[in-house]
Image (tube, rainbow, N blue to C red; front, side, top):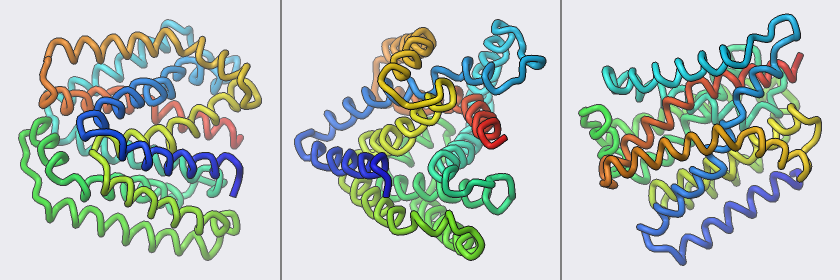
Amino acid sequence: MTKFVSFLIIASFLGLWLKSFFSEAMQTYVGFILIFSFGILHGANDLLLIVRTQTIEKVIYTTKILLYYCVVVVLGAILFYFIPLIALSLFILVSGYHFGQQHWQLNIKRGKGWIEFLFQLNYGLLILALLFIFHEDDVQRIINDITGFVISSSCLHVFFYLTLFLTLVIGFIIFSKNKEFKRPLGVEFLLVVILAILFQTSTLIWGFALYFIIWHSIPSIKDQINFLYGSFTWHNFKLYFRSAALYWLVSLLGIALLYFLLNEQHYFDALFFAFLAAITFPHVWVITQMFKSKRS
């Protein structure tokens, strides 16, 4: 177990401990603050990452890159407006792959085959499904607010058991042929237990925020800084933050405007996840290009 993974586990237990001092409302508010800080920040340097993943001959003008990125975000928002059920389904699938990709990219070093892709997809979906089954009422309400579709508890449980089964089966296949994959299994089992306890005892937003920040955003920021600047240091983090600050602030202003226009938590929860989805679609493509560039 690396020092970094040990830090993430300790941070998870710290989040579990802090939860006991917060009311459910406070867990939700602090959870949103965490998502708006490190969560949004980890995707705010996509423009710089796009440029760095291209060769000198293939670099597109920065304004064009920004325009294309914004177009994808707008298309994601339009998709949520006109066909929200399909958009939400795509968001869950893309997010599941993105979570699994970030989590396993160091231990499945090849990462090009369909078997690795399916494992990363199902692992990320398993984490989401674990969160869903412990917060069925909130998940059902948000899905209904976004899509108008009523999903049953049995569907959420089928989703969980299906992703668990596929993760175990595909994981066994990889386990039999990949030595790097065998090393972290004990840590991964501990992590799933920690997440199950955290999700079961926390609000939906607090549980999602802690997983999203501790086990996704912070490792992603670390990988991005290593890719952009060569090493993960405090100086390089400041460089990363400076280059991301403008886009981060624009995202925060957009979310703040959304909140004040709605002025009601019931609708804000639903549209927040729709907003998160719209910016997730291009971000996942950018991070995939970064990992490909690192391997090459």
